[in-house]
Image 1 (tube, one colour):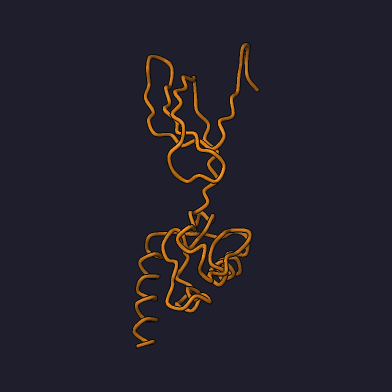
Image 2 (cartoon, one colour):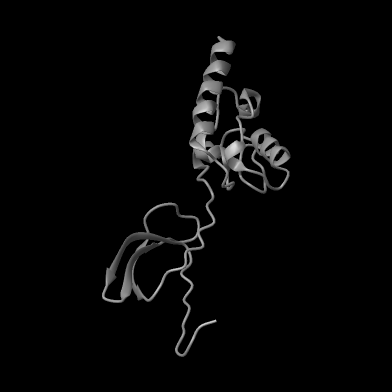
Length: 147
């Protein structure tokens, strides 16, 4: 894959806090976190020729970790919405053509708690801002209905 002197360095659990070009190189300032930490970390400076980021996004669910929110084991999205997304996509399709899946998919066993926006899609990459806006409208309708 690489030519003469090619080196690849894997930097686990790092967050880029600063990136700048110096000459023909890229200088990164990284925060390297320990296992299980979501903030802080040791500051590292790394000079390199190029950067490859493999950042499999997973939303931080610490806010509801002690609540009764049933999450999909595959995507970390709330279960009802994850099931609706999976059945609607059929493994492909045009994400720009998607519509909201309705207020009922935002319900969870935890009373009056809703996960909306990007976090509601878990690790899924098909989230659109128009869907997030519709989710807020759907939640407001659920709250109004419950009053």
